[in-house]
Amino acid sequence: MRVRVSRLVVFLWRDGQLVCDDPLRHRQIALTVEAERLLRDYADWAEPTGRLAQQLLAAHVLVAEGSSEHAQEERLAAWRDLGPAATYYHLASRTLGRDVFRSAAEDAAVLRAKTTQPDPVKEYEGPRTALPRTDPPAVDFTRVLDARRSTRWFDPETPVPLSAFAALLRWTAGVRREVDVAGVGTALMKTVPSGGSRHPVEVYPVIRDVAGVEPGVYHYSVRRHELVRLADASGEDRLREWCGGQPHAAQAGFLLMYAAVLDRTVWKYPAARAYRALLLDVGHLSQTVYLTATALGLGTFFTAATRDEPVEDTLGLSWSEEIFLGVSGVGVPHPAERDRQAAMLDGGEAAFSFPPDAWHGRGE
Ligand SMILES: Cc1cc2nc3c(=O)[nH]c(=O)nc-3n(C[C@H](O)[C@H](O)[C@H](O)COP(=O)(O)O)c2cc1C
Image (cartoon, rainbow, N blue to C red; front, top):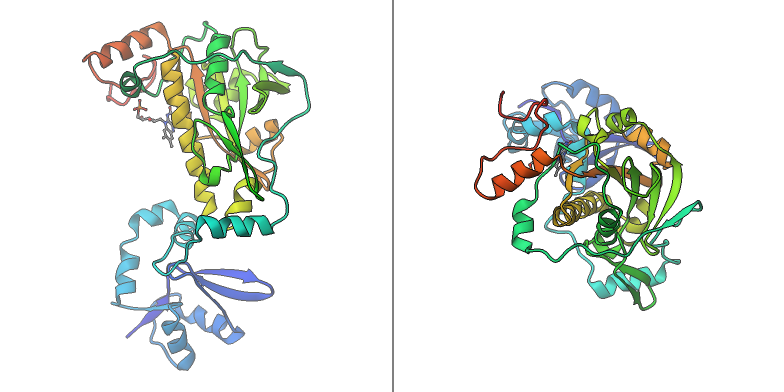
């Protein structure tokens, strides 16, 4: 029998010791200097010699050739493309059969014992613009679901009406109600669900062309339904650059930049898995933006293909506290695109939305 170092374990330096983390089994073992040295002999298949090698095999730091673990390592093609960071995060945050989940009452007791909760909203200092309290029109829900598309062909000359912009923010990110949870604190209620009702996602509208609003970078105050101006307008080149070079990002009337405040969610869920909740929260918000924009007659797309660092710099975010996670671009669809989507809804030819000069997935 030959053995080699497992392809799944990760070595971490913790408190002056090298630790082998087995994310599949959620086990960590500290390695002695001898074990650390011995592992170098098993970078590739070799006969296990001595007790230490047997111990490392039993601890799943080494795997045996032909074993079920070896077979599993051979089936990791997709994970090899995702890379070691994704594999490790997925396994380390994947729950096991033996894991214990707290009841809501136990959760509340733990939270009551903690110091005060992080603020559920963020308020910036700066020039404020009150937004009109408009609602989306009453529409046929089924038709909205069916009409939802990712729009990448906007009318770059037509501003987004202020009423539609305000209604979109109010009915997606705006606070609908607030609940006082006894001894725990305030929880917001929105049209969007959020893990633990923590609503960690802040929305930063970057306005290119919205009627009556000076172009620029803003924060949306979810309680007050106001914009707070943070920075001057960013040119179209930068909007495109922020969205991985996608031309439609520079033609949308505005971009909604989503960033999650770590504290808010981690306060309730202090575990690696909470990172998944942050990503999922953005997905739920984006989908609500998709549907609300559709109801308002606007076009939208979501992108996670973003250049995070320059966006953080512009918004003044530090990834150690608030992480930028994605963008919804919203605008008035180009009239030809609007007609095309309407025709598709009524049985016309199906195609994804791209301007005529762009690749649109049909090989033309
Ligand atoms: C997680 C995620 C990432 C996406 N990234 C992009 C993107 O970078 N650029 C883009 O134009 N659309 C993006 N989209 C939209 C998809 O391309 C779109 O949903 C898909 O092509 C199906 O088209 P439909 O939304 O019109 O049904 C993304 C959607 C999701 C959910």
